Image (cartoon, rainbow, N blue to C red):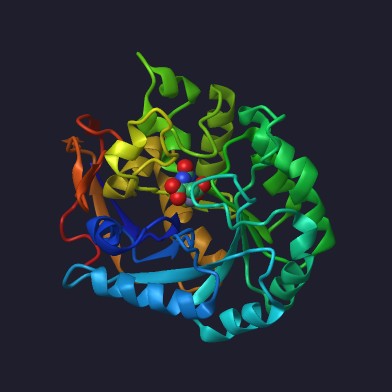
Length: 347
Ligand code: NCD
Ligand code: ZN
């Protein structure tokens, strides 16, 4: 059985930099026409100028013949000015600004320390109609780690949505039924991305036979009832939900550690894993909207012209990929993925 789709885009991706960028970008470019590239480098991509330079490094790292467009983002800090947002809007290659609560996740220490510090910047985003991308978790250590997304809605996001009625917002990598319900209730200017791991796994996968660091990402995997709510949202044909892998490569030694980094690497099977999830739900016919239409429409970019073809034929994922001087352990390492990308895809 095969499935042909309009070529998809990845609306939430970590590409890193230098040798590690070169190690991973080909996987994404093979499958996706475009990707929203996260700005959480060290130091973070806080200005249009830094985004321009990063964009050039990404393009230079692409394999020969690749047809892939990086869509850049800026990293919001307490000090991001309205003038910087105006520059970002005017440049044409910055498509959004990312809000990380300080300390919430990998390389987020330069993030926003309190939401009222960025009210001016959010007003500028609203005025210039540049979307705000949100890592939606509170950092309050008193809140249980599994409840941090739901608490973020109540403490931060609901107020932002009320206060800035025209601001377009993507609630990134939603993991709970509370987030799904919130996005639906907020109407079409609020959208959400959903990762493959949150569609395919529940939190038992963190402890399957022992601690499983390669299943650890942020927001952390949740209970089965939440996974089911995500599958319903992704496969229901609703325009507010679209594909964002959150593929987040980390060197093997920093994952397999006494204090391992958060992030699941999925770019090597970035569309195939979603095909598996939609197939399991009996909703393959909804994959194209989720992967190739809803995100482009939300970002007001044209849908892609080319197509890709997937076949239901399983393949074994390598145990690891080269990653600079280290190795990268991908999602499903040494195990199978049920769908395969046909080689000519996207070219
Ligand atoms: C991301 C990373 O490694 O950059 N990690 C993750 O677990 N998702 C950061 C992020 O998106 O939260
Ligand atoms: Zn991410």
